[in-house]
Length: 123
View 1: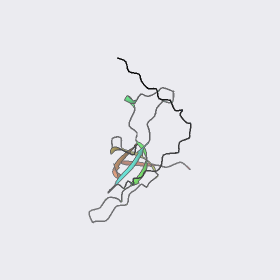
View 2 (view 1 turned 180 degrees about the vertical axis):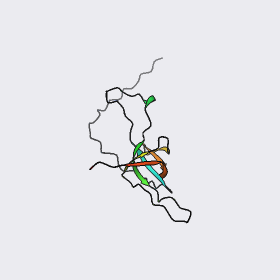
View 3 (view 1 turned 120 degrees about the horizontal axis):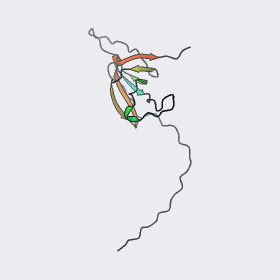
View 4 (view 1 turned 60 degrees about the horizontal axis):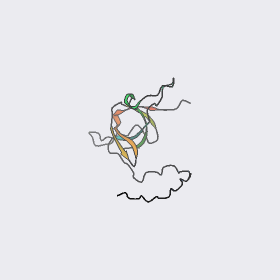
């Protein structure tokens, strides 16, 4: 015995421009000398036009600082000031940190000692 499927009318997809992603509703405050980074995506294609598959892509080592902890506590009880601030582009150690997702965005938490350099634009 065959059952008839009821057809549902298709609704046309509207071509409404979507707004940029809203800022996160969660404030992320790292502890100690930890830094939250947004890794820069790796290269998709070489300069000569060869597409790089996901299986051989290198881990990114460059990212943007999202949030910085208050700094490391020294033996005498004082805090060492962090050497980076939010908004800076940095290079970090290849396999450093802990990757996680927050509201659909890939982020990385690294120790301050794993940040190797700050990238500054040339004047």
